[in-house]
Length: 74
Image (cartoon, rainbow, N blue to C red):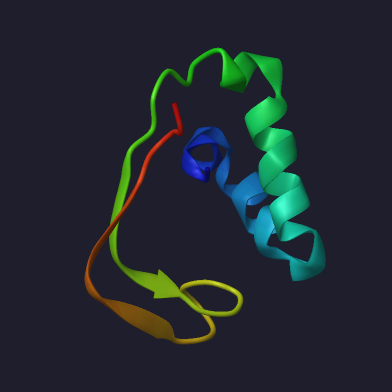
């Protein structure tokens, strides 16, 4: 869900994380923006931990007991 963020400029990525109440709404807007949406074919995410609260600069981490795999529903 957050892969399209990698296509944003650095200043836009910083803005994305400000005012966290709109964070998920902004992620949805990025992923529905046609030029970016047309680049995305398949996303598979593997994670062994999750960031808590605002992101890597503030907040902690939650470590899963193994790997979490996220992929598209068919």
